[in-house]
Structures are given as C-alpha cells and as structure tokens.
Image 1 (cartoon, one colour):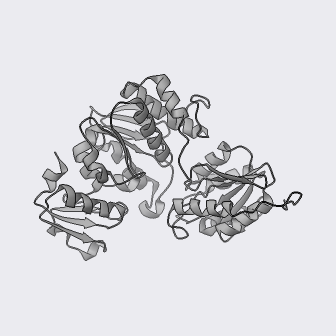
Image 2: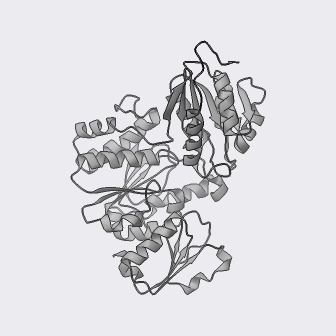
Image 3: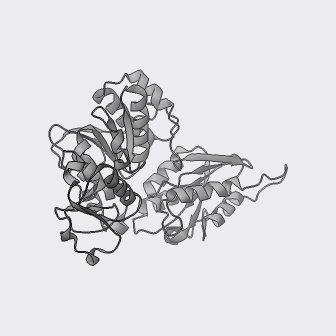
Length: 408
C-alpha cells in the first residue's frame, strides 16, 4: 500500500523535529493530504498521543510504549518498499558494508540503486526517486529498528557487540532492538547473518557468513573485518542479483572507504596520522590497531556510557609496546585500571592528547585516533570529533631539519 493512502485524511503528530522529523514534514507536505499535522518535541507525559491517527516518532526518542498508532519513518517506508529493500545492521561495519554494497550494485546493475537511512539522507527524502525496479540499500540503526513491526526482504545482520547501554540498559535489550531487522520476515525473505551473532528466531531463509581469509578480496579497506564485510557484499551481488563475480571484485577493489574509518590524514615530521573516530566500542579500536601498520600511539576516550572495557584493558596489558593516551570520562575510567603501566598516559582533552602524541610517536610510526567511546558531551557527533582531530593534525607545523621531538 502506498504511504499516502495510509496517511491521507488522517491526523498526524510528528514526535521529534530533528533530521528525520523535518524530513517527515517535507514528505507530508509534498506527497500527502493529511487532515492535520502537528510537531511535538516534548516528553512522553506531556502529550495525549491517543488523539492522533498516526504518531510518527523520531529515532532516539526513548519510550517503552508502542501503541497501534505509533509508527516511524522507517516503518512507513517499509510498508511500501520492503520487497525491494536490503536492510543492513550490526554494531560495527554497517556503514562501510552499506556503502560498499551500494557502490558495487550501482556499478554492476543497470538499475536505479539508492543508499538511504542511518548513513545518508532520511529514507522518505528519496520517495519520489523510487520506482518498481529500484534497489534500496538501507543502513538501519538500533534506534530505527526499535519497535519496528516490518522487516526488509533482504536483511543483513553483521555482528553484535555491547553498545548503547546508556539507552537500552542491557545487551539483551539492545539485541532485541537489532533483531527486528528479521523478526517480521517470512519464508519468502532472506537473512544473511554473521556467525558470531547470537542465535535468533526468524521465519526467513538464513545464510550464515563466517570470517573470510585475510586475502580473499583485493581491497583498499584495511583489516580482516573489512574482508568479512566484503563477503556479504560479494554474496548479495553475485548470488542474489546475478552480477558477474569478476566485475564485483573489480568494483570492490576501487572502493576507497568512508571518512572517519581508519582514514589516513597526513604524514608530518615522519609520523602518519589516522582518523578512526567512528570506533565507539573496544572491539572496533582493537581491530583498527591491528589493521594499521606501524601504529605506535593510540588516542582513546570519550563519553562513558557504562559499557564494559575489560577486553580493551586486557589488550592494553598484553600489548605494552603501544603508547596509549587516554582522555575524557571513559579514558579516565580505563586509566584507573592501567595507571601503573608506563605505556599509558591520561590527558583531559583531544588537543592535549595530540600534543603528547607528537612527543611520544617516533618518526616512521603512526598515531591513531580510535576512541572506543561515543563523542557526545564533548563533540556534536563522531564526524565532528574526527573533523576536529584532522584540523589539529593539519595544523601541526613541520619541524626544521635536524630538530627532533622527545620520545619517552
């Protein structure tokens, strides 16, 4: 059913007026003839939601309720386009996988391919660009999946790590939100799931994807985790869309990656700097350290969301050859566990951390920003943090020939 057929003549409340809320308002004004439309940004107990035919809730608004009149932009989109949608989720890697899949399908298919959702513009911004032959690659965050009562035709669930505990409280509730990507699939649908995702119940045909060998695909993307992501892309392109395998490999080899994901910034005074601001959990930081050659210094820390850092603390203790510069609230928490180690230092800010990194990182080595923490409270988002880091790196002055930094 077309979305307009569901909404025409109805009273609508848009709850939340951020990026998706504004997009929803544009969509209603352009494609629908609703009876009324109100915008609300207040708390749950400040509104009588039962007065409206539809309450279109923005992602990230926390509520335990999901009455019949509650919906979301993602759910509305799937109500019309689920049969032609590939939904991609996972704690880490979903943006890279979605972008790589979009790029490869665009190169190998003579069809309209769109990249929407958590990575790009809100999905309803593309409403007028979709026809029956369009393939939609939809990156889906846990907040977009939470309370969802529809699932895409093809679902990709890459992995699951502890994250967003400040919002969900427990790993189990976080997993419950994520699993909605397949919870409403039928036997006509397909789930591609990483081998380390916990068992989940689904009616869909299921394909389990395990770790790929390190050299399976020629990629510009670093790390074994990106070989794993590429296997999902290769499987979808060749087995589900019939793309030529050689053409798929060639397209994937030309993909240079996304900003803030192990992104090379600059080499100055003999030190190479990398921006991995997207890494907001310990496992992602460990993967980045292992993926970039000759890392000598790692900058870690951000918002403390209460996630467990034991795996990162263990890694630090087992790999004292790196310099670890810890900052902000989560950095302070980690530092309390490793303060006795000479390889660990604590500073208050990113600026201080980079200043210290210049002293500690020897020429020929690399300095990596990979925070293992969210950015909120100190930066607008991970992009803002990454941009701030790159601006600081680009402001570093070349030392005169013969001048040396101090290396402890």
